[in-house]
Image (tube, rainbow, N blue to C red):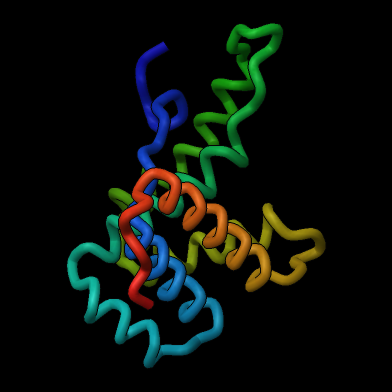
Amino acid sequence: MPENTVTMSLAPMEPEDVVDAFAFIQAIHTADIDTAGAVADDTSSELHRLLLDVAARVFIPVTAADDHDGEPCEHSFLAAAVGRLPLELLCHGVCLAGARGTADTIVRFTENILTEDHGDVADVLRQLEAAGMKQAMEAHPAHRPTA
């Protein structure tokens, strides 16, 4: 099977990147345009890359199917393709390629897939941020978030 975003292990994000990405996502979720703008100004051209890193960590684990007896089956390839689809759209799509479109997609995916009955999206986003921060701090213990 060729290496792709599903089979490759994702390198941990930097703690500061986790903070920035989720600050923007939460701001978009709550329609806090001032905070979203401030984060976008602070991160400039890096924001879209940070959001794609978060999207990969949200979409891929949710859509990756377990192997059948240790071997990939047709369902694992289908699920992997479903997970890669929104990432491809976010990377190359014209209308979704910006930071706002990427953040909106993460929020909608969280709302529709990761919460029951469109539950507390903000809580799930906080849990995702905490998991990303934990991984980042374990990989980069000398870094401390500034926000």
